[in-house]
Length: 206
Image 1 (tube, helix red, strand yellow):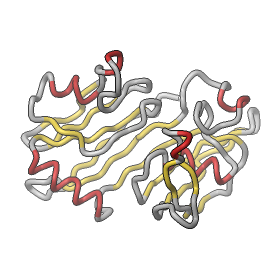
Image 2 (spheres, one colour; image 1 turned 90 degrees about the vertical axis):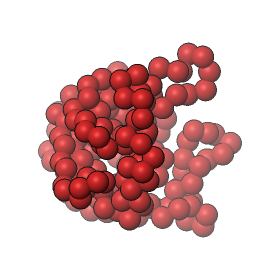
Image 3 (cartoon, one colour; image 1 turned 60 degrees about the vertical axis):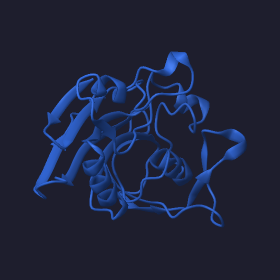
């Protein structure tokens, strides 16, 4: 894990795949990005989470006031996050996935599409490259909402699950690689104190 940026209000971390964002349940799940950052910055607070299997940029706040302002910015869709994924098959060149999501309670932590009870969830996507050799595509993703597992469920519902997705992809796609091929590669946000724009990038490791 690397701390890419720090000041008196904002921290940006590059989280590796396989690391929890926040502590999980049980003694073996205390190690996480938040705990490691808090060992260096005692006032560090999580603004949002990345799935354990997802790598990339993770935003944290220093103190509750900064956390509150950043949380409001997320709720008002003033924070831009972009991801890169490798998906199975050949999706359209670009588009939007507008499917409401809800927790699949009997099968937690899975989420599912639920047109009646789900929360509005919107993802934009565009293909960066097609790979005919293994029938996959490299896709840039922009979640306009921040639902749990949103990108993973939306792409699976589109018929193009993310390669290496142990929760949603069928077995051949799930086992085609040793990790989930999903990376949070870009982040843009206004500084909670100064209002100045901040932009961060993380190289895609796959």
